[in-house]
Image (tube, rainbow, N blue to C red; front, side, top):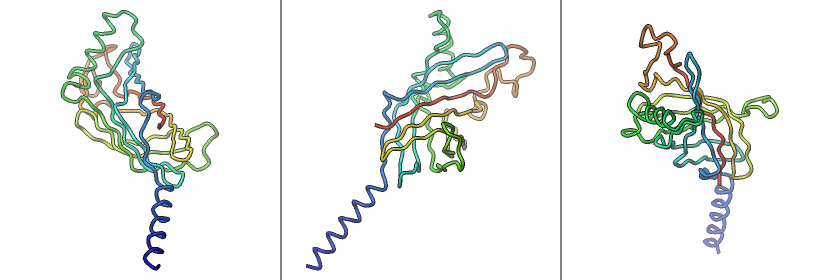
Length: 198
């Protein structure tokens, strides 16, 4: 009888833990990632696909997550001419920029997710801290995001500002090359994301 009681108690504990803690995969088909790069004379934008991802929700709070970006999927959306569109896309994929042949994936992983106190309605309500790896180089990264949680499901939106020079992407950077004038490309680019779990 005592043994049966121990088994029942253990089962209840397991169920309680699994209810409070859930790791859920990202629905890559319903999620979207876009990039925006600027230069002295203008800007370009495009899309990027998620290869896979997951987030952990514990006691109705976002706790951690990991996202793998398919860098071979980089596309350009603002250039209508097919020839120039493919030219820029190819350039972004070569060693001047993301070197996708040797580094086909980028990874963002966060282990800190803090609710923002007194968050503005419809504004960012979480502050995330983690590490971003591009071209095999890892640096700390933090940003705010709008996160909506419902049991084990999550929907997050936000923007990440990335300094490309930290990842050895120096092409036409004013930090490393003089006299670029209006040919200079700004060091920071923006990643906008809208991700949802399955």
